[in-house]
Image (cartoon, helix red, strand yellow):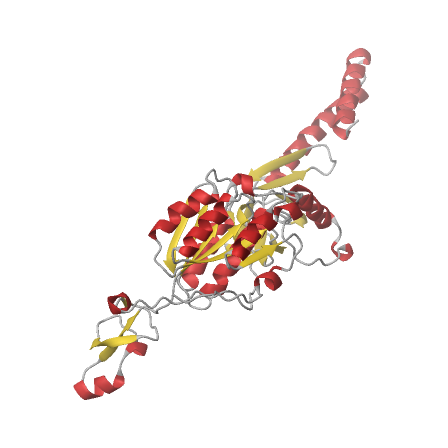
Length: 429
């Protein structure tokens, strides 16, 4: 029986005793119990009233394996002190525990604390809402008030540093194909022109400037290097899961343990081909973009995602942000995606296909694209190691017979070691 029920039962008995016997003692006891209930309810209500909650998230972008830091604070705007105040965070960010109990919060006082959370899964998450709970000194009432969500965060997929990977082979068709102007500073200077507002000083051609006595800048052409396109298979039937739910539950159980009893764990990916494929695609994109290559991305998950080929850190941010919210919910098989998306690609383009599908039709399409002048590289995630169907060996054998580089990643493999093996492309077009 709770305390409130006991007090109510005592009050009812006192009231009955007062009505039956008419003695003042029972009336006084009844009045005291009613006054205590009213006072306790008012105290509990004021415990969550006149409270201002604030949340400051230092960054809204993070990556799996890296921390997110927050500053949370409660301010007592009333004139009465708060005996105790429980702040319960209901964020859906895995492993995020920002709850706190504030005691003896005096009038006009503020109490704050820092929260540091290591990101364990990619995606878009909401930090909040927060529930404020307080009560009276007798423990009779608990009153809660919900504060709406105040912040969101995007967690990029994990990436690994690759020592080497098949680089795209340059296409040298000659003629007008190389005479395409670009605003990038490349190694191919095609001529000079007069300075225009907005030109960088690193483009100034000083010998011509000295001869003509006015600013002259260099013009550049695109590098004779092929673009890289990463095609990520997000068909729902192509992926397998070896217990992501249990993996999350084990992380939650570990998070409930006292900090001093937790054992440090090595960052590991969820046991699903989807997460391994996304991490491989993100790592390959980072590898080429950090080497100033033009890279594009194609994936058909919840919807068709196409990022046109570009270069630089801004392009890497676009790729990672797209992969953060991408899931294996596509309805179009990889063979159809390859047939449709490769139609507009020029000869010499490098296709990096990341898939865990054991369907033998898409390797046939990939081999046809390879013979038509595209450079195909396959990254295969073995679904059998994740409890899925066998057959990835037959897919890899088709690529091996066609002299197409193929990487096979299995559950528990160190991805940077598998993808870091240099397998050069076998021809230059």
